Length: 411
Image (cartoon, rainbow, N blue to C red; front, side):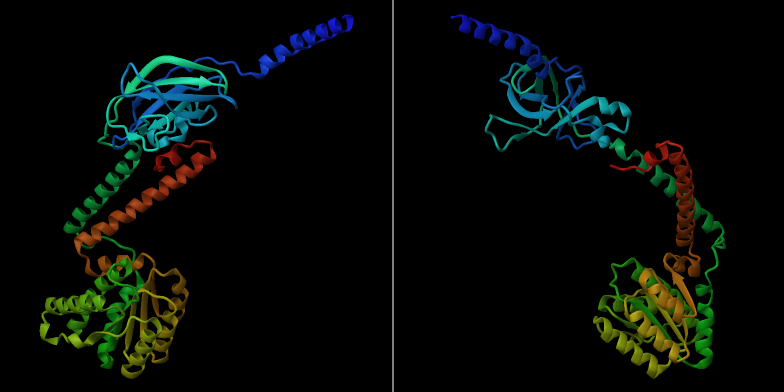
């Protein structure tokens, strides 16, 4: 009996001593504060946002339970459990911006509600819905008895893209201003591009020698920007060719491009007042096989020996094969491409090379048409503005300010 009494006392002491430790291991729970529901901003009206303040409860092992009901009086059905260490307003800057305060608020987006606990096809939220929140440590659950509600509504304006609207408006105003200016003064200054200045010289040289001009549009179809720019340049070149009473040959890689080029050259001859001099057979389709096309063009160069070769558009490995053949015949060559990998070959083999955006500027440069000229000037000033902001933003970011970085952020 004496030993049993000692054993009983020992067990009682152990339980008494360990009970505070066990109580400390079990997280204490307090109801979350600031629980609110609101229509999710900047959306099309298909979700509701639930917000509540982060607290000392937030730690491993603690989770929040979200209940929903279509009626204020219930029945309440558990929708989801959210770990207390996850889900903050800062995770959704497209809705709530980039404020540091967002890191102290929990956020949960509700797009649908369950009809029963086993429902695998919850219904989308379309009307006012009621919500309750509870907190759990895995065993105990404390409900926050405040009931909140909200209804989803579509927003007319997405404020997260306000910066895009502002910059697009600034750039549009600049372009419209310079178009207006170009209509009053078509001689607006554009940086001289030697390759474009030399086009008239090449056409004059070909005319004096009694030999044709060869013009290539590259190897892409009419959906390519470089091909569109190339056909635009072709129209200006063809008009000068018509004025000089020379001949232009345009072998095409794509049949659609061929049809467009025929119309462009025909119109250029008509504008020059010489529609009878236009020869449709000089603009023809060869093949849409890369190296077969290159071989055919090389053959044309060797047979007709054009005095001037103009390569405008997008090119691949055939660029050097064609340009090298032109060098062998002594032709004056001007190339223009936005294919970065082919620029070294054109620079090596051609007398002049238009690099990158110079190809797109060529049409405005040659025609001095107010719409194109004003657009080009407006774009240049817009780029200058962006470069200035980037420089200031780099300095500000180095100094620890994220304002200019956030200025260009989109979500």
